[in-house]
Length: 230
Image (cartoon, rainbow, N blue to C red; front, side):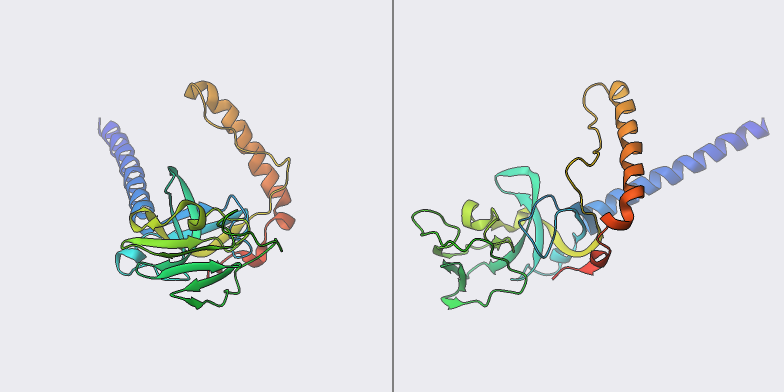
């Protein structure tokens, strides 16, 4: 009887540890920090496809976003997707782009060293908003954001201002970076009945994990690991 109680007590201890760990993880993910992976090249060369980031979710509870911040937010046209861009103007500022050059409040802004231009062509305002845009004044509670890869980024030039309420946080460090190639194994999606999909998922997990271990010496971008994001 005493042994049975000890077993139950031990089980309860493990269960409490698991529950507390899950709750703490959810609190940290919701209010403190969250991990994100870069899926596209719109922020090159600041952020590359395959970079894994940590995003501070509490910093904007104490301060407002400012020009230069790299922020993660819910995409205004599809709230299920997350985007990452650089804030270039805040509420009350006037934004204009003239032949790819950014102007804030009527003054040209020196392109930061992070910005990248890959297309020598310049499009007129009647054809595209990419290279010639505005002037527009940023409304209260809004931001104007752009990707560092200026010729290859869907940002405020195309879909408008960003509501501050959609911001998830500021990206501050790259904690891992993996250079993927076409044909690399991928995790299977848990689609359909869980018990039927689980074996396929576990098999793909073992396959991906083994592949990553074998290829990590030359696929990991070691020089980018622990790099601060500016």
